[in-house]
Length: 411
Image (cartoon, rainbow, N blue to C red; front, side):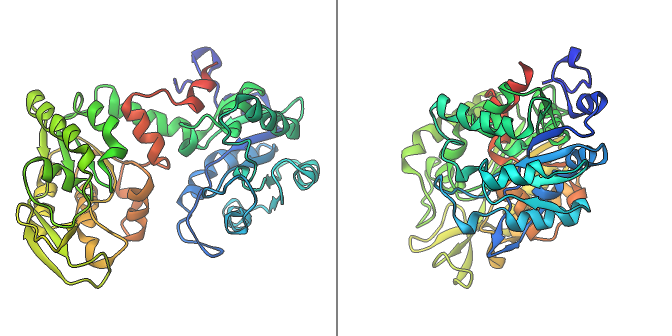
């Protein structure tokens, strides 16, 4: 994708749409408003705030804005716990305008709410995943929903793709509707792709990547691709124990994917062949159980007791990771390096984040749990160069995959 503001330069952007004029026109915006909820309370509104630049610009220009978004993973039917109603309220507060919440996706309520929009007004459709056609593998089924979404904005309508967290999905409100309406990239999608291209096209060196999270299997392809691009690869989180086991260490009851050991041994050999520095934990916090108040001891990573499991990197590893990040010019971080949700096992993740805040690198937090950790631990968001809204999309981009929701904008 090019970030040119001219259609002749590649993808048309929301700036082009605004230049054409949107007053009185209905504009369908696919946003990513998939926020964590505690009952009806939003616990992290980062994705809502990330959607504001595009939405605010459209509102200010007099567009009649219709937002499609999802929340959670409903099974294609309405579920009250996944309703976007609390998000509509928070979005209205941040935008400074009332957001009319439809009670369905493309049904009578949606049609009435959208039909009643005035210039500069906003409507939020109900969770688009309440309609099973949104995520259907059948192109005809997705196409049918896409046509109904397009009909909501009418013949002079437009589509703005601004939900980066879903652009790796071939779904009706992400991909198929873009084939039916004049389509434009929103501010968030433009910013995300620009940043990720900076990571893949001649990044400043040394280039270090920190990968955490639970499972190696979730990151096989991205590790394989990164080994051709990075100078240092730091591994933490649950996935580190499969690496430690592959190096011949016993890991007790720590999370272990035995079916991935051969692949990990291949990664270790490839890193050595390419001269990539592979940094693994040298000590861990070993707990008697997976619980916030478990009995804990710091042990060497090659001496984890058989009756304990590692839940965080230890103090020596925190220092090691910070040292290996201190002189980096580019850093990408995806995945916490410990169970940060428990205060006793949050210090490793805090140490990684703090090293990025205090360092001089172009630092990118790869969305998902990493972004949640930054906010949960009270770290300054402006201390990072970029915090992505899309963990899965970021990883697939770094794998070198084509993102359908981006590719369709280039048509």
